[in-house]
Image (tube, rainbow over all chains, first blue to last red; front, top):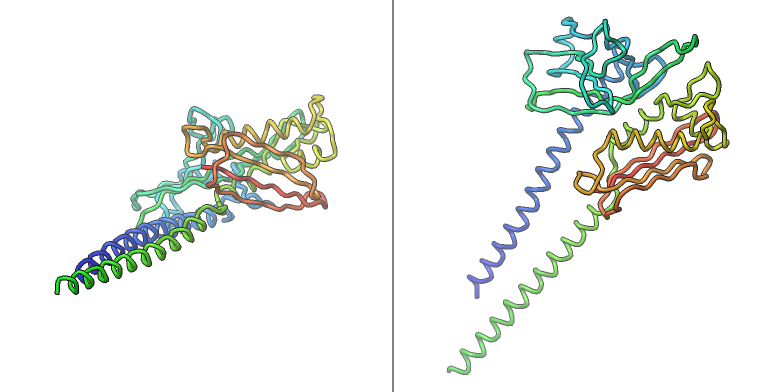
Length: 151
Length: 162
């Protein structure tokens, strides 16, 4: 009887431990995601990217100027920053010659940090454009994708 | 002697069964609580970001040649039953633009991660837009954003079912 009860409680404990372990893994992943989300939020709101008067908005004119600049290599703790416009099938990397008829901005690439994971956040990609003689702010939907190293 | 032994073993079996039943009830209560916790609406920062960013999206609706409406303006225009310069109803344009943005941004379908979505737009507590696509399941993530547009309050609420 005693042996049966002990065995039964061992089985129950194993069951409980497996549930707890699954929850622990889920929480660890959530914390990691939140951390990288905070980094991307911080980058989106930084003056190097943001629109002057809006949140959740990145100025694509600034992205084109920033592309492949190396002076930020010690400043941003990420391995790469890419911005991609949503809704296009084919990738066309932006440069000063084809802007704004392109959809991928390779903003930053730090070879010193290896990229093990990446996270994307929705942002509005805005620029000022002259349409039929009138200047308007044109915003499209995009994602800022950040590559980071998992510690 | 044999009778005594039989009685004792019967008591032991009853005790063991009682312990099993007790533990099973505790486990069932624990499972019921954890299942109830997970089946509610989980808040999603991804959807929150999507909604905030989408509201800045420049639509194809122009009230006049010098102005391009973003989605926030289009919600107000739809609420006021306005027309765009190309004679398209603002509400039709709002409907079309939101569907396009959602379906370009999230993979939705029977074989995809998300099975369905629901989007509701309210202005001053009146429904401006209601979109429902796919088969609604019990597991969902979602977010709600409340923004002021020209002195009025606009509430955009989106849920993704998986």
